[in-house]
Image 1 (tube, rainbow, N blue to C red):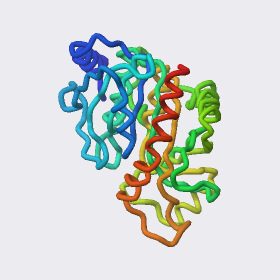
Image 2: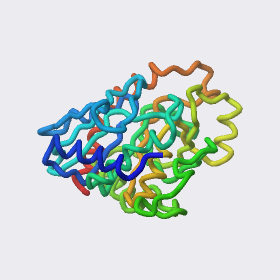
Image 3: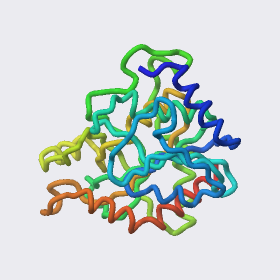
Image 4: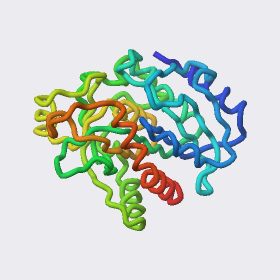
Length: 272
């Protein structure tokens, strides 16, 4: 379990590299890291240099923190994240969220590339996460609670902040974009789900399924950060179409919606 001094060590290291004090954070999922390229006057810090950060080997993740200006706001972007399926503990997966809180982040945009379960959705759609279902049977807050970091029993009824969601919908409408809304189910991976599992997930009320985001959203809620979740629906989940699933397809579709995704997030940042 990371201690408070680990978080402060990471914070101090980041502050030694830049005078910028970001209040908006972004976690960029598979194939979505290009948004960080839009940041002006960027200071780039590899995860490998930040004390106590894990090292991800996931494909499509650059593994660096970028701090700078976006739409006149001071932001920090995480290009790449750590996944439970890589063998990291959930403490390691969510440690960056603790550090983002420590450096001053108040609003966090969490993004991912995932599979559509709702058959009314189409690959290439963007989905605003309204809520989540944790299907992994694990929670990043299990263990001793440090009251300096958050309460023992956090409320998740507004884990995906209603006001931020409203802002996102208004920005999408202004941009003439259809922004889907739905419930995200967290699956540990690294296997894609079976067709039977997808039928179960749909029955439970989820619209999309992926292998990230939920741990970070839980820790953001615990830390008092307002979170917004945006999914890039890169494929129809297993069994919906009679075709195999591949990570190459995920990266390819994420690349195709690049402009739409970048414009949406930039528009949201401008409104924060």
